[in-house]
Length: 125
Image 1 (cartoon, rainbow, N blue to C red):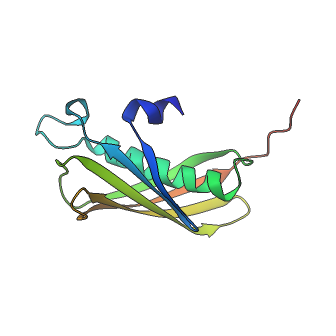
Image 2 (image 1 turned 30 degrees about the vertical axis):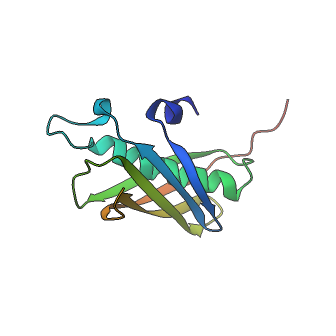
């Protein structure tokens, strides 16, 4: 996805129940205090769950985010941020995922929950 490339997001590992993605920190992603902008952290959480759902359905089910809750614990100023998602509920219309966000030292800096709506399948044609 172009937006993910713009931020430099990469899938570091695929798990049975989710994914781990990484974002290298750059000066243009920092806020005026010199730490990572909270919107980048929220984006990583959202994308990590979105990719996990995409993998779960082999890319065959369109989705959209309906809710995202992020708790920020510590400012991030290292070299990268990691987001490890876990799908905790896959229903008929909604999917809920949990995300642990860690800095490059492995310290938990934020935690998030994301809810996605499963949209109707797109038929070819």
